[in-house]
Image 1 (tube, rainbow, N blue to C red):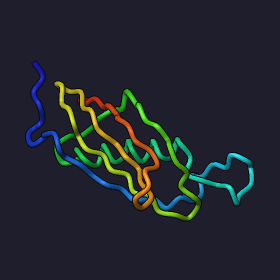
Image 2 (image 1 turned 90 degrees about the vertical axis):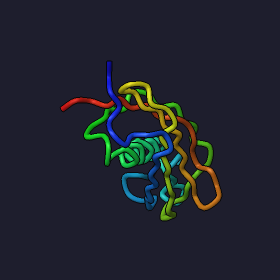
Image 3 (image 1 turned 120 degrees about the vertical axis):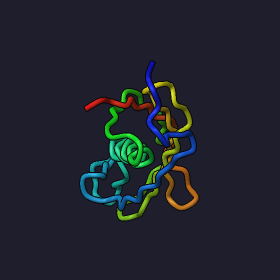
Image 4 (image 1 turned 90 degrees about the horizontal axis):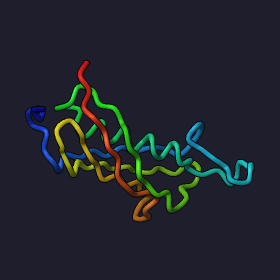
Amino acid sequence: MTSTPEGLTTGLSATRSLVVEGSKLYSPTGKDEHSVLSSPAMIMEMELACVDAVRPHVKASAGFHVDVKHIAPAPQNETVETTATLIEIDGKKLRFKVETKLGDTLIGTGTHRRAIVDL
C-alpha cells in the first residue's frame, strides 16, 4: 500500500505569473505583431504551477496526462496568471485543476495529472 506524503491534501494550490514574450510566443500568421501565448508555453506553466502547489510535500513528480483547452489569446507583453489546485489524490497519482487567466479573461482551463516518483 502506498502512503500519502505528510501534509499532502486536496485544496493545495499555487499561482505563477508569466510575461508573454520571447520563446513563449507563437504567431498564427508568422507576423510578429500577431504573436500570442503559445499552447506549449501555457501547458508548461500549468505543469510548473502543479509542481509548485505540492513542492513542500512532494520531492519529485512526473506529469503523465494533460487535458486542457486553450480558449483565448494572450497578446505579446501581457502578463498571465496560472493557478493549479490539487483536487484528487489516489495513492501516488495526483490530479489538478488548472487555469490560465489574463485579468478576468480565461485563456486556458483543464486538468493535469502527475505521479509522485521516488528518487
